[in-house]
Structure formats: structure tokens, C-alpha cells
Image (cartoon, rainbow, N blue to C red):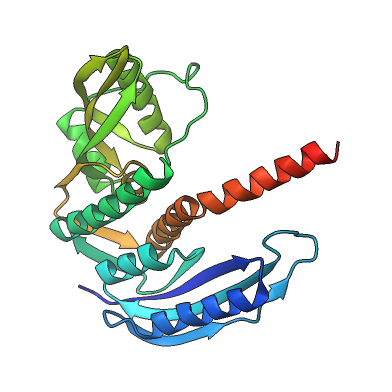
Amino acid sequence: MEEIEVIFYIEGLGSDKKVLERAMRETAENLKGEKDVRVRRVLVEDVLENENEELLKYSSVIEAELAGDLASIVRLVLRYSPAMVEVLGPGKIEVESQELMKILGEVSLFLGKLMKQFGGLAVYPKLDDVPVPRIGYEREEIEELIVEDRNVLYRMVIEVFGESEEGIRETMAKALSLEGCRINKLVVQGETEDGKFKGLLAAELLSPFETLFQLTGKYAPVAISIIEPEIIDITANELQNALTDLGGFVNELVTRPVKRQIMERKNTEFKLNP
């Protein structure tokens, strides 16, 4: 697979300067020791102090320039959850659908384990006023979306929970439409126990690569398959956005316990100081 050149910007926050400095040094050493990519440089910036922040008042950034194939770069994004990924080159890559499915499978498995521990990622506003999107497209329309608009046609199976089968179907159709998908097929199957529906949603969707990648991270599907095209071309900007989003998803999940502690402390201080 074609080599991709990237820069990771990895942020670190802490309440103790020395502890943060040690953690950033260890992370930098771990990056330098990675075997599946070429590590060109790793720079650890000085720890800064934010006097306006009481709890996580110290911060630092690691800047790491790396080169490797797409699968290796994605694994490092999952491992280090950079705040931003900058893709230096090439301007465009081509990935076989089978290879991309393997990568998406790894992403889904990794995020799925984190979600079981820290909760889900897919959150939407009330969708009552959102119109139910069209479901079903003619073959000519699908071909045009793939060829002209560079969409990917894929199937995804997601675990779903809710009040009723029909309610879940309508809500998920709206949610997938808001994400930027065109829905060709949508099926919900499962059973109701104690007044709650639990089951699986299978969807055949059309969307750009970025949306496909984001959905995989947000929903951690139990199954995913790319139908067309056999070769997916991805621009540097699309890849940069997808990798940055992925790092953000991981960071959002693993930092939830710390954020919860901060909120609880602030709420306690508010109660003690009316």
C-alpha cells in the first residue's frame, strides 16, 4: 500500500507539571520505538501553565512526523489519539475496498470496546421536525453518485435500542441522513422485552469516504461491507479530516472519567460557594 506522510499533534493536559513532563517524554519514546512506520522526528514542546485553569492547568504538545501505509497510520491514531493529524502527502491515494474494510473493521472493534467501557458517541438533537429521508435509489442514480460524486456504496449492521422497532427505523433514517448518507435500504430486526426494543439495524448506504469513516467510528458496527467501487480514491484533505475525527473520537471516550471528575468538583464548589 502507498506510503502516507503525516504529522501527529498530540496534546497532553495535567494538574502536576512533573507528572505531565514525564508522561509526554514516555509517549515520545513510545512513538520513536514504533516499528510499523518510519519515524522522521518527534518534538516535545515545553509544558505551559494556564493560570486561569485550576485543575488541568498544565499543557504540552508532541509533534511527530511519521510515514507509513494507511493501516499502520490508522492504528497509531487509535493508539495515541492525536488532537490533529496533518497529511503531508501524497495528494491522493487509492485503496482497494477489501483493504479498507479490514481497516474499518479494526476501527470498529477498537471503538466498540471503548464504548462498552465509557458509553456511546452518536448523539443527536431532537429529530421530530426533521423530515423522513428518501429510501431507495435507481441503479442509474447509484452509478452516478459513485462515478460523479465519488460516493461509496456499502452495507453496515448496527446494534440498536429504543422504544419500538418503527421508532428506531424512523429515527435512524433521519440520523443517517443528517450524517450525509443517502439510504438505499434500511431494515430493523429484533425483539421487545419489558417494553424496550433491542435488535439490529442493517443499512445499505451511499456517502463520501469521510462519512463512511466517521460512521464506523461513531457506531462501531458489528459488520460492514463495501459493495462499490473496488478502488476508493481518497484525497489528502479527506484523509486528514477522517484521521483527525478518529483521534477526536478516541480522546472523547478515554477522557470522560477525567471530565466527569472535573464537573463533579466544579458542582461541589458551586454548592459550597453560593
